[in-house]
Image (cartoon, rainbow, N blue to C red; front, side):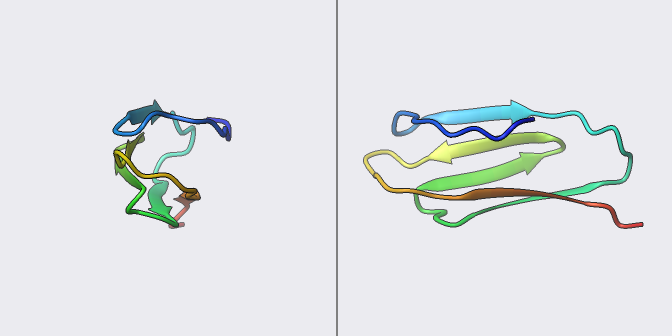
Length: 68
């Protein structure tokens, strides 16, 4: 999954999914502004919930950690 920047309308949900070639990776996600963008992971599916009627910027960081 590549890195992208864009504009989404307020109240939108953006969902992306990625396959990992490596078994056992631990995925985590954080937002620098969770009031504006609330990220969540379910398996390898990333969902970004955008707050309605708010503007601003947020950096969403996705980490894949190999526990081995």
